[in-house]
Image 1: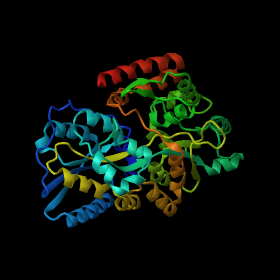
Image 2 (image 1 turned 45 degrees about the horizontal axis):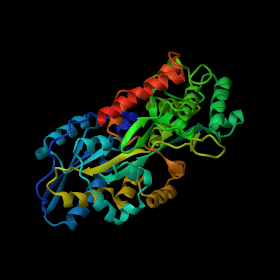
Image 3 (image 1 turned 120 degrees about the horizontal axis):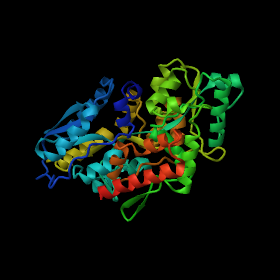
Length: 434
């Protein structure tokens, strides 16, 4: 979503970072539309931003271009509240006659919406679309389930390391180049400046913790023949969990204060001057600029385990998909292309700060705005995505991973026991999803 909306509206932030779980609709028996009308009015649901006017201008321009190219076709755009979108979309899947033709949705929702029978398979049209060839591979993965494509990426968001240049200069230290350096630097800063968290971390910050697991060579789950099995309790994953949870304690970010923090809280701590470092997104930039650390910070990719490496980041973001029930499939696909095409994505970056999903467009906007560069580098180093299973929604909604982190940092369970218990819950969710 809009850069400034991520911190100002926590619910909106989670959705558009692709982090939110959905209330999944029961799988419908038959959502398939009859016919493919080449004229008429298409209905589109897009997410309402905290500051929506800039988004509306970009969308209006894309719609005008579409309507000019398709005589007899119109598009009606409705901006729906993010916090009620799950119920709205569930109702649309269950009542195709009143459903829109296209929807904007968080990219972690793809597999669940496909299982519910709500999204149309547009693999053929996507493959034939020239611009799609330049789509970032991870963004492409976010619209793909079982080898089929169910939408087009609208924007992508990743996290990197924000750090206080004034604090680092005062203490004579440099930005960490390895994960081990990151941890030792955080603890050194807190030791020298007890009023600061060295690195603000959160027990409920799942997507800030994932890079530690991936950098250690671990995975959330492994896919085999279309089914997923939890891998969060593997030796490599446990190594990453240990690294992340080592940052909770009186030597950096006390568990009593930090165990319950999510991503918004950690970025707010940094923006307000309470932390020397934080893991924040490109979408956090405006909130940090509005804070007390404006002009006193820089951003670098979150380091990996080896010198100069980059920890894989979670690639969040949003997509736009055509509903299977649309009676205007061809027009809906063309409108989807207008709303997610290169020209629109570049305009959306200028208006809202959304990172484009096309590699060439992203490189162009990075030249316009220097703050984008570390996030583009992070994406270029290889970002990752959550398991493409409808079970992920249940795992996320049930707070399986935050519970695991909190059990560890509170001392209730060790890493082995907590990760084993989390793996059992994940496997149950994957099995229930089918």
